[in-house]
Length: 144
Image 1 (cartoon, one colour):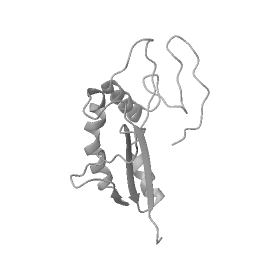
Image 2 (image 1 turned 30 degrees about the vertical axis):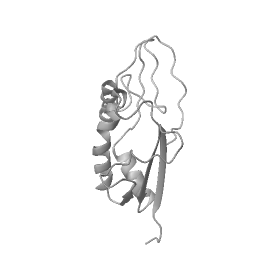
Image 3 (image 1 turned 90 degrees about the vertical axis):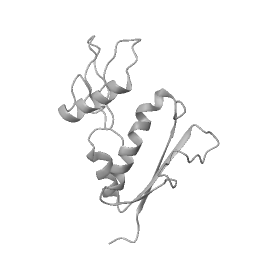
């Protein structure tokens, strides 16, 4: 057994304040994702205040910057948590000028998880051409 645990950090810049409607899907996902992490094998700790909220921490001069930190028993435990949910990113073509909604994005992620890459939702490693016939980019290795 190792004498070390794995610490991880990720940071992000919010596009809007947490109470803005643009952030509603993100805010709604916080509690379920944190609860899932808390119950995952190999989970040790996550940054949070007494109320269980990590969004209040602002260690940067820029108040739009958020931080997430956690500790895991091993790299394998963290990877299992991150990737057991299936794909965490999806891509799809939208007509020029149309802006997809967060609800549509969640539907596309679910389609990718259930059906795998398809014209409805795909990944960098398995791209699909645009409906107008524009060729897809070459297959790439996905990073993280």
